[in-house]
Amino acid sequence: MKPAIRRCLDAPRGLDRRSFFKTLGLGAAGAMALTGEAAADAAANLVQANVKRASEPSALKITDLRVAVVGGAPFTCPILRVDTNQGLVGWGEVRDGASETYALFLKSRILGENPCNVDKVFRKLKQFGSHARQAGGVCGLEMAMMDLAGKAWGVPCWQMLGGKFRDRVRLYADTTERETPKEQGAMLKARMDRGITFLKQDFGIGLLRNVPGTLSMPLGTDAGGGQRVMHPFTGISITDKGIAWLSDWVGQIRETIGMEIPLASDHYGHIGVNSCIKLARAMEKWDLAWMEDMVPWEFGELLKQITASTTTPILTGEDIYLKEDFIKLIDMGAIDMIHPDLATAGGLIETKKIGDYAMEHGVAMAMHFAGTPVSFMANVHCAAATENFIALEHHSLDVPWWEQLVRTAGGQPLVDKGFAIVPDTPGLGVELNEEIVKQHLRPDSGFFKPTPEWDKERSNDRHWS
Image 1 (tube, rainbow, N blue to C red):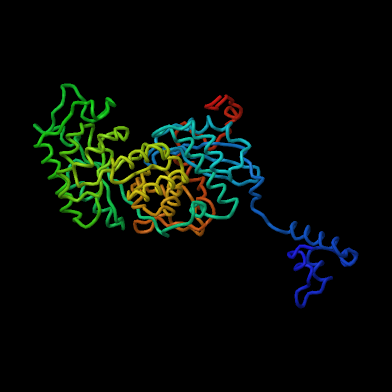
Image 2: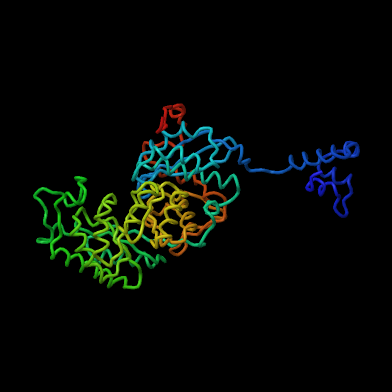
């Protein structure tokens, strides 16, 4: 007889055999009629029948995928709902600004799959992702499967990533470009007053459009980059006067916020590598935490030139899909820091792998994010589980209803004095606040409408013969 069953049949103190079976629901006659192995089997079956399960992980299956697209968060964000045969619901999100179609066309490939097999299903899907927003569907579904797996097994996502290094995740506040350094400084100071301990601002050649003698560029060129010409091919450069002007602009901001708080930067304009080097060198005296995406990440040799020419840390990564291209940049010494966006990089597990590889090579990891609280919480779990993490972007400080899009256990806030709280609840640790989500849907979006048109798309997806 199995030890566990023997312990059940050995009556506890103060509880005889008849009373024990009675507590399991057997009548006295039925209980006394059972002996030996029959009694053991009956006890085992009754104990099993009285166990309350929220889920049976090995039998969990995906049955549906639906979408609701939130607008103004501050960007457009498709939220994914993955349903299962056991009533568990998993939440995911396609990256900000991307199309929900990136996820919907994968529906037929996940129906019937067990979402607890996150890595297995991810390997099936990842061939359909690519860099930047084109990874949105694959990554959003990975988030939802991690949420489901955590709920099914009763553990938070950070536990499935190997445990956590921190209980609170530092946030950095993005602050879009203002016309004057006084306005910009005031915005950043207001962030600090809210408890933010790490700042980021935009500044670039857009500020120089009406300042004579600061830019050199071919006639008719768009200094704003609207023509989508990559940086090395625009012919735009910053003159010495322009470099001095931008340095003074950042210096005035430092006078407002002080030199003690970390200040990162982004969005300089589509300028060539030599202008990038001049600008980065001019920023050295202002001790920027990093300068972000100075040239497209694909040009690793150009990034390496910039990195080698300045003491200002150089960072990239928000548009890179999967670990392989991060590894290339790290191995060639092209960057000082990485900056994956989990909703592009490959989801929680892949981003954790990216962070660990960077850690092994002495490279720190910040995290890019600009979505709803669903994707935010996926980032929080990954950040908590990654040792070389520095700070996670919060792009929605000025959206008053943003945090109300979800509910947490006990009504715990998502953010406390510049830090995200790492939850101990299963999965991502949040559920949608449906009424608030409905108030902020994109005008042409329904609220998780049925999507049967995506149920049966089939093709031979295999890459090999």
